[in-house]
Length: 579
Image (cartoon, rainbow, N blue to C red; front, side, top):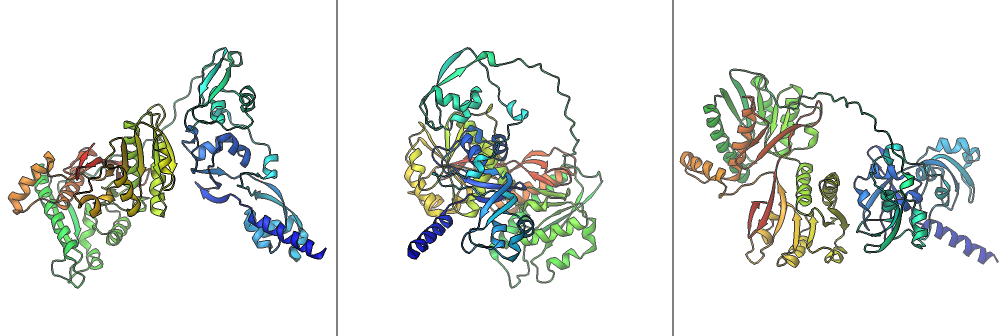
């Protein structure tokens, strides 16, 4: 008898601890459950499982109104409530408080007996707790299911624009559609749809025919009231400089002219090429009427390091400082410029934090977010009615890029494009090969082995379109192996080609002055110098350079300016060209 009881208690403990509960994270300042979409999941089922209004789920996950995809991550806002908890083996007051995200003092306040410790099978009342949600397909938290789900707000209801007629229509279910989205689209309750179609669950499949009652008499005409104009705070988002007859401009470069112990010929060579391009820009600016004195500082010099240079009083009189090309040194110069309220320009990509709270900062290279917005826009433009497959990466960096692309893709209104997206993994992406006449894969991963395998698999298939990263061009297997004629599309902050008319024009001038060939770094020096210094002459924020496009936009009141323009390039036949 004792052995049977002991076995039962052990089995119970294993079952309790073996249950899978939804993980919790913080998103946009709110606690959320992390739900991985399983087969058959829909928005209606999620609001039932998590006792969360559908409008809250939609607001936290822009784009899922287009449907849910197996394997997709959905964030469900937490609904706090009072729960009952039964103490199990090895639980402590601390572990229970962490489990429900409440303080130990709160638990002891409503359960005075816990001051002396917890006992096995003790029943606790825990107010304002985050309910644990079982993620097993066969079970759902009973306490959550009993909670009444708040009704959607009027604002959420008004988001649906539907026309009606007196009839029952037959609708063929499209990919990404669910019974819940159909009920919202046609304003028919899910139970009514289930009854009319003899459905025992809320699951429907693409291609399935569903009968939908359309009842005109249920629709009331609502008087349209005038909406008062929205008050918009005027923001001066143009990059402007005070008018002056002459300007002082500082240029920081790691030239290493006197060969220090840290000399790196590649860094020094790139810096010299950048300076040569900048010098040509200075000459062009003189012809445009700009009176400026350029001060070049070699912060890799043996006689004068960066700290010593920043201590020079003359720097306080600079109208513009071009920050170093290297991240660490650029941050030091940025800090100096911020402290002294000096205008600082970053020729290459920088952390977004350098622009926050600093209206004098200018980043001349588009951010990863900007590039993903352009890539998503390109996908929507070319495949307005098709389904795109995003093969999600596994590293932290890959997942960040995936999320940037997803956000950008879902922000494109359906009035512009009807394209949909499926989130796949490296294990299951092949199952979507025959979904469309054309296959559209978006792969934002730097996993070399997997990416090369994908490119090799589809390199001879003209119906496969792959969107990837500019970093792939750095692999010799992509750009240096003649047998690997791969093709893909990517977003880039610049476009350098000797066949470009603008590059050809500058190349002639560069050869005449320096008797050497133009390089990408020289073009970057030319573009960055010309772009910023043209602003001293009060020209437009929107400019086209030799290898760069510029569209400077202020990133909110009190923040700096970010270049939001780039290029979408097609790589084919070992050459990149604008699409």
